[in-house]
Image (cartoon, rainbow, N blue to C red; front, top):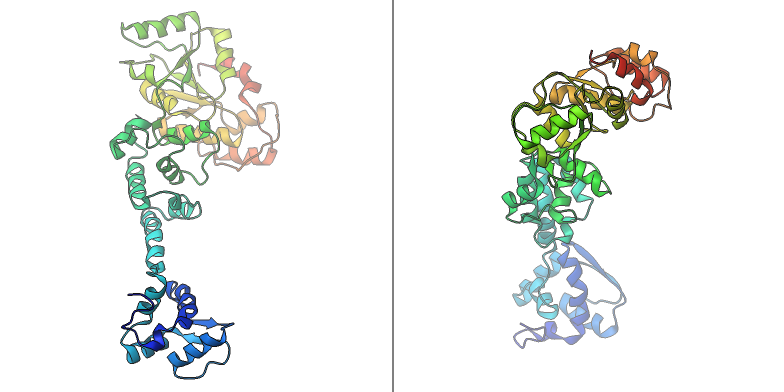
Length: 379
């Protein structure tokens, strides 16, 4: 049908009504109940008077349902059909909006906070098939955290595309919004988010710093680590190497420290006599995997700042590390450092420690007490 279909009565086919049908298109698409018509020229007012059966002398407000009823009674044709004949098929804006919201609502059933972060990002509006992307993201996150695996392996298993979770891909961005409140700006920080969920970018670019590990076994790698320990040389263990080491990796209790300078001090003073593992800040995935593999008692010492005690508590829960020289007494006996910044964290192994830190407002870094550590370990 066209606007000038000869089957239409003259009072609907009048070209003077064309501006009316064009103006009615937007309110019909958005589901409005009424619309205001202004600045109508004389021919259009005259033609519209014939449609309405009453004079139109100026601006007027139309109730769209009433107009539809009138047209169906007088011409057996709906208002929508007339407007579509004159201007083309109407957009189903309600349906489009429902389609846009459907993927976010699917996320909300899984995790409301995830859905809210995605809703404000505009991410789903930039992809061709947001429904499929959301289902893939949910399938990925259902497997996190889990056994350590490569990001490419996880992507291939879920989507069939080994690069689907690469940095910059929509699926990676969507999954990350399900893991953290704010996606980090740097590649390294994003890698840490993935690692905390058990996902490695690769097996060679990250490592954990160690000293004095004496793995059992006659393999070349085991012999190389024992040789490094005998020489007192620190060794960076990558996930690649860790995957290829069988059997026990230590025979004595291991000291876990937060700062590389402390491990270096042990190497200078004691060579490789004491097995040490350094987290270098928040423990990486390979550090956690190594600690879980050691099979010996673990003691932990870190900075007396809020981040340091968070790491201590996390390692207590994750790998059973026992805080060492991390009491209120140790804190008060240490030389003061810079201001204690950040959000306070509890110290369940020593409840009075958090109170003392908040009271003093001073951070104590491991390097400030390294001589005490060197003289006191093994405990």
